[in-house]
Length: 221
Image (cartoon, rainbow, N blue to C red; front, side, top):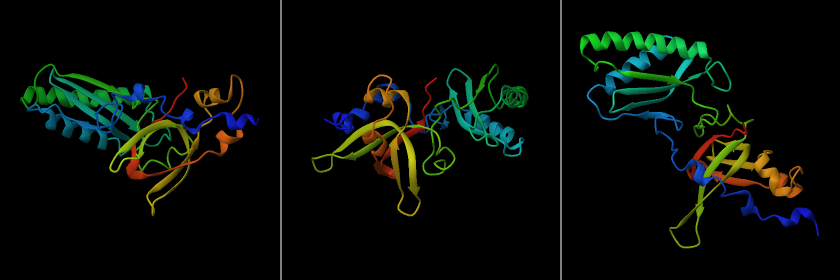
């Protein structure tokens, strides 16, 4: 029997859902986007953060912004001149220093509450990839992909996931093609210490953009 016939396609999927249960696009954290607590001051705080971002001439962009009811602001910034998007410690300190100064002035003016806590960080090594805007930017990186397909019953859907590599994408058809990423968790399916099998290397998945629930970078660190 050919070793390549010993593996079911589904063995390469559905093992990652539990790890990503709390991450979603636009959560204001690792999923990026803006999440406001609905306080009287959070829109003013966001406006100031955007002004700070613009002061870096577009190089430092707000990846995620979140306010909490306990007077905490959490900002994740990315460096656009760095292909990975990761800012340096110096970048984070510079953004934090300028933003802190603006917040202090706003506290004195009464437009934000006193003693605001500020946390500035990077998007993280497993940042969310925006579809389709960032597919080309991160096409060489392995990605965790959560997607839905039509179920057997009419109107039903099946959620699946896996660690894939981007093979291609088409902005006219709004679809992309994935292959299995050459990462440890996928290689393990071929047997300990073995590379990806021929069947694994040739496996492909076609997904419409709107079927993708979550796509983010995958790190083996």
